[in-house]
Amino acid sequence: MSNVFIVGVTGGIGSRLAPKLIEAGHRVSGLHRRPEQDAALREVGVTPYPGDLMEVTTEDLVEATKGHDAIVFSAGAAGSGADRTTAIDYGTPVKLIEAARINGISRLYLVSAFMDAGRDRPRKEGFEHYMKMKRQADNAVVASGLDWVIVRPATLVTEDGNGRVNLERAIPYGNVARGNVAGVLAALIDRPSVNREILEVTDGETPISRAVEAIRH
Ligand SMILES: NC(=O)c1ccc[n+]([C@@H]2O[C@H](COP(=O)([O-])OP(=O)(O)OC[C@H]3O[C@@H](n4cnc5c(N)ncnc54)[C@H](OP(=O)(O)O)[C@@H]3O)[C@@H](O)[C@H]2O)c1
Image (cartoon, rainbow, N blue to C red; front, side, top):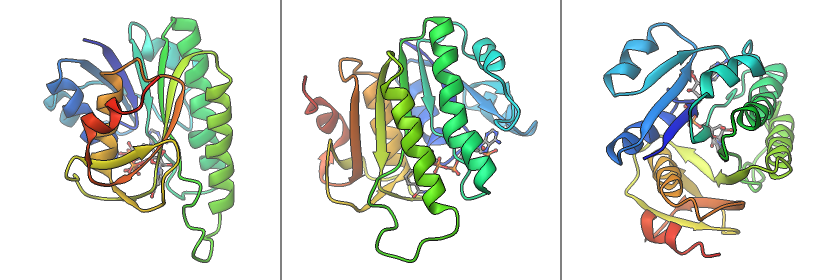
C-alpha cells in the first residue's frame, strides 16, 4: 500500500486514476483548485488539498506531499496560454521534484506528450511552446536523481478505454483513451521495479497488466 499524491486529480486522467488506486488498496490525495471539487473528491475517497497551480509554491507542495510515497503529475494548462503552459506543464513538475527531494519521496510519475502529436496538421498557436515545456519537464525529471517513470500518451480521447494498450519505449502514433492512461499509471505504481523509463502509450491489443509486466529490466 502506498500513499499517492496526484496533481491533476480532477482531470480526465487523474479522475480515472484515483479510484483505480483506491480499489488497489492505496491511499490517494490530490490537489484541486476549485472549492466545489472538495466534496466530490472526498466522496470517491480522495483526500483533497486546495491549491491553484498558478500560485502554489514549492513550500506549498512540500506541505501537501508530506508523508507520501509517490507523486503523479497529470495536470495541464490545456491551451490556456503560454504563461500558464510554462507555469503548469513545466514549472509545476520542477516544484514537485524539489518537494519530493525535501520530503524524501522517491517516486515521480509524469504525464508527458507524444513527440509525433499534431505533426500531420497545421499547428495551433502555442503548440510548439507546449511541446517545448513538456520536453523541458521531461529533462528536469530525468536529471532529478529521483526514481521516475515518464508516460507519453498519444492523442487523448475522452473514454474509459478497454484496458488494452500498446506500451513501449517507442511505438507508432495513435489515440489513447484517458482511462487506459490511468490504467497504465496505476499498474506502474504497483510495479516500482519499472523505473527510469520513458514509455509511449496508445490504445492497443495487450492487457495493461501484461504490457507493464513486459517492460523488463
Ligand atoms: N490532450 C492530449 O491529446 C494530450 C496528449 C498527450 C499528453 N497530454 C497531457 O495529458 C495531461 C492532461 O490530461 P487530462 O486529459 O487529464 O487533462 P484535463 O482533463 O484537461 O485535466 C487537467 C488537470 O489539470 C488541472 N489544472 C489545470 N490548471 C490548473 C490550475 N491552475 N491549478 C490546479 N489544477 C489545474 C485541472 O483541474 P480542473 O479540473 O480544475 O480543470 C485538471 O485536474 C497533461 O499533462 C497533458 O499535457 C495531453
